[in-house]
Amino acid sequence: MWKGKTRGGVSGYLFFIYMIRYLGIKAAYGFLTLIVLYFIPFAPKATKSIWQYSRRILKRNHRDSIHLLLMNYYRLGQILIDKVAIGNGMINKYHFQFNHYQEFLGILDSGQGVVMIGAHIGNWEIGTPFFNDYSKRMNVVMYDAEFQKIKDILKKNGQKQPYKIITVNEDNLAHIFQITEALNNKEYVCFQGDRYLNADKLLTCTFMGQEASFPIGPFLLATRMKVPVVFYFAMREVKQTYRFHFIPAEKVIGSKEKRAEQLLLDQYVNALEKTLNQYPEQWFNYYPFWKLPEHKNQ
Image (cartoon, rainbow, N blue to C red):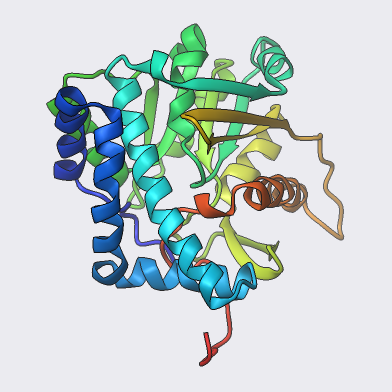
């Protein structure tokens, strides 16, 4: 289970901010090689989780798993650098491509509240400049520990958050009322659908061939509120290019055999699998995600 903390500290972000400002993006990419080699031995839990992902989920051999591990850490570093660079006005250094963008905008313009569900793959924040005025109506649901870290980084870097934040705190249910209010006000609520803290409120399904657990909240709220749902992933490609994948969910009707939230989760997992099969190195959940049996020869 995820412990509520994301890899990387404020000092790491600030280091890259200054490197990009004074030495440029390419120099920051070059420095990543040293960081990747550092992380492999000094982040053992993360390294183990990606190794298991490669060996037991993707079924790759030892050589290919070493390559994927290196690429995973390198790609994470690139995405961090890109986030900092674009946040500092260097958006012209990047290229962007879109799948189903007009259909997505049509849903945002439909006069309803909208639920957007992403995952910890790629770089979901990179799309913020393209939402323009839509950002004013966006509410990003974020665990309190993650929010505090991002707030510190933005404050020290003189940046403003372009969207609103709804913080989740396990000690109260205030976020549920805020989410409901935002949807009733025809605003957009953005979730990450692949992490949870409360092990008592889960949905399970087969994901990438193995059983995995997902938070029930985003899927239950979306079906109860009866609002349109879009799955959204922003994936990094070569030559500083990002491709945005917008996948509108089909309407679901629950039954005795399968509840509506489970049907919505099935759609989400299908979209997530297809995206991850295209970009297997951009899986950034650094903890035991799948319920895998003990296996000595990995």
